[in-house]
Length: 297
Image 1 (cartoon, helix red, strand yellow):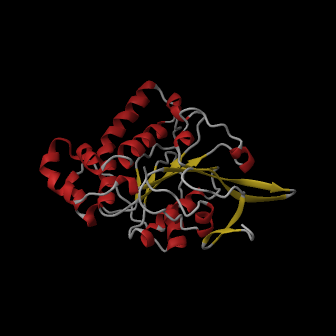
Image 2: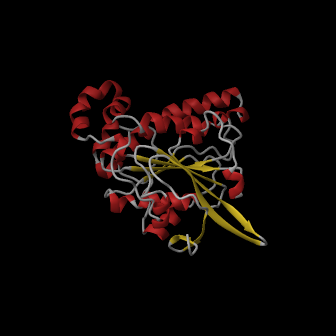
Image 3: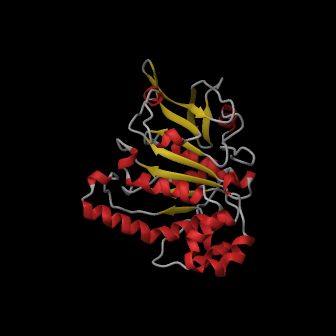
């Protein structure tokens, strides 16, 4: 069961619609087409951690096609936040996690696949084996990055760059997401440390026990790009068994709307376990300060 206070999204009207904010220890999925504003929402949620928990959240970018998600530009404009990226290295000494200056960073981009598609079916068997081997080489650094940030006070994670596929099970991004969510974000701190240090755990055990954190206070937000553009189509989208949406505690849909000849954008909280939530569709627009909901919403 999730513990701790609600986490603000950094958008007061959205917090109000969510009955106070997002519930830590659970998964929130923000779904909508490219360019609809998911990354801006994720940045505002991560940035709000500074005021609430004393540390901004972290951004795990799974983009594979080389297109920028513009996180640094959004972060600086919306939150005055200069994002500090973590560079992947050939080797990493896992004990670096105890050094705040060395490990604490805001952003990690794992894969650069040069425009390749993201489904397993689009790859030849040897390419899929190459991907899995690449993942295993980078997994230790990924675990160290998450764990090191969590032991130094981070309690929010935004996972961005997930691209649309016909079935989640065909996407290698969802294989990675499933691992990150269940085996990192939702794992007790000492067991995650065992995965990181492996045979060296005993030599690090005293430090592990001196740096505990409650994994149920960590919030996870997945930004999920959809095929659907219109909000009505997102609302009517069926949820398949095993779909990431079926396991989410909260689902926020973002899409375009049409009123005669006028196009707009709106947000809808489609699912929110644990408290009341607003049922209305909430039209919004962007300003230099981020989300602005239309009068009356």
